[in-house]
Image (tube, rainbow, N blue to C red; front, side):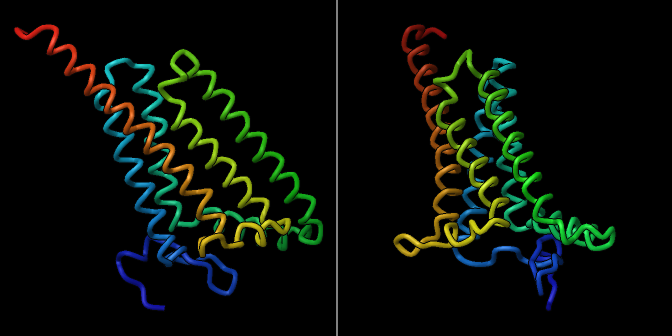
Length: 205
């Protein structure tokens, strides 16, 4: 396999083993990567245009999540993590019981995701309307990540089912990202309108 400076930092599964390469090199894979980085850009703009610390922090969290998931879309760190656990299981002799450990992992991941949504949702409760759309987007993405983890338990057939020639996993992931982008865009529009109204009320300012 030919490695370039670009794919040297990306990842691919070859013969069920993680190695440097492009993890999701198809059209929708790159569309999703672009969407993540565009969402990162929009959230970063909200960070820069938000004076209040608490709101700025929330947008900063959204920004960090979008950046990480954008890189991870091609780094495919979950495959690396899965491969490392599989190798450890074989080395320590509990590979035959791996299904039980996979269930524990999925339950733990689901609880962590649900806990994150509850805690983060509670943190932004003071201004939930402002963050409603990006919050729903993050919830979609948490749901998607848990479903990807549950693919160990035959969720692949559902995720790979196509509707209008697009796989469900693509639709779920892009839906979450679009919600984040839409929420950030609304926030920027509202700030611009407030600025225009404020200038109109005080022409001398």
